[in-house]
Length: 128
Image 1: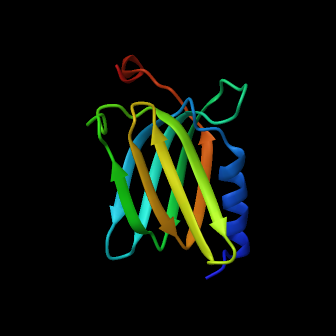
Image 2: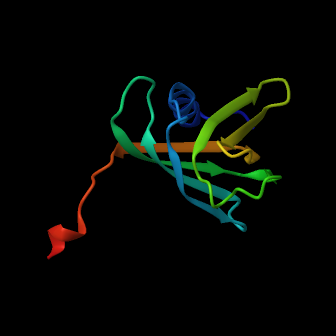
């Protein structure tokens, strides 16, 4: 497995983002499809305070590991970092999501899709 051109583009976009001020909104793991989807919310670029909602979908997810020694996840969903790596020799891609409260989630993957859009904040009062 080598990353397809669209996966390489998504990989480059995610690698260029800074997730250190963002929060995990949801984690979805589809076991049979081996698909892991993360939705994150917050600023995604260094020095920019614009808030985004981003969806990262990892295809062919495997080797999922969660370290949660302080039992802070999922009560603490602040992200410290999201790192991606690709080893050409092993032909293997991996991701590691680290939380601000000493939890980490790591996995391997075969493909990646990335979507981000400016977050729109609405008030419940708007519906009244």
